[in-house]
Figure 1 (spheres, rainbow, N blue to C red):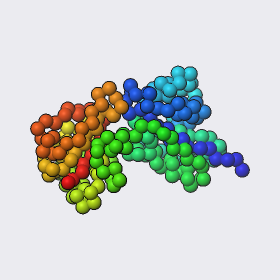
Figure 2 (tube, rainbow, N blue to C red):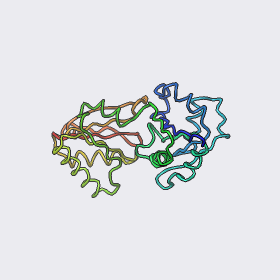
Figure 3 (cartoon, helix red, strand yellow):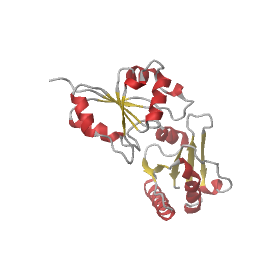
Figure 4 (tube, rainbow, N blue to C red):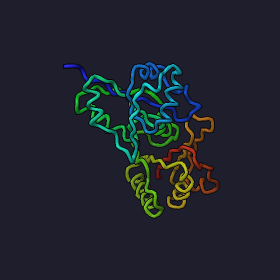
Length: 235
């Protein structure tokens, strides 16, 4: 019986200007792969061309996966069982974190196909290590609720959990709602609670600051449309 193909978890840049953060072995891997699961076809094409201009993009099979379009896991299994390698790419950073790539990974495990995680930038971990907060006990909760009342409730619950467990809470927001989220954090949390804002990580306007809520109230940064991670540690 033919050996199944492999699934490569391919990290992408967090900022378009940060190609230097991608290790050379990523380029070597994508040169051998013709099937990719991607969140955005245009972004994926641009990234692959940036890695190697000689890649024939039109010869590749780019299969979409996003919140409203789950990946075709039946097709993924079929391709793997035919011996085809598959690449998974997120919009930014490492795949299968806050994107549907994990469904393709799970499909690979069900057919005993090797899964290859590859080293590259991860905004969650980069923000955590730069925050000065507890890196031994932390929780990534992804996106908070969109509606303000539910979002405020979620922030209160995360602060209580942080106090109870001395646990760093990490979360993200759609970039155009960043300012609203930060305002909700500083108006909801205790003045002694630490909050880290890590925006445009690895990019030209990288901004990483940890302050108490009391200190943040004096002046809030402008975060509109900037990719950001928020961290909270109650004390």
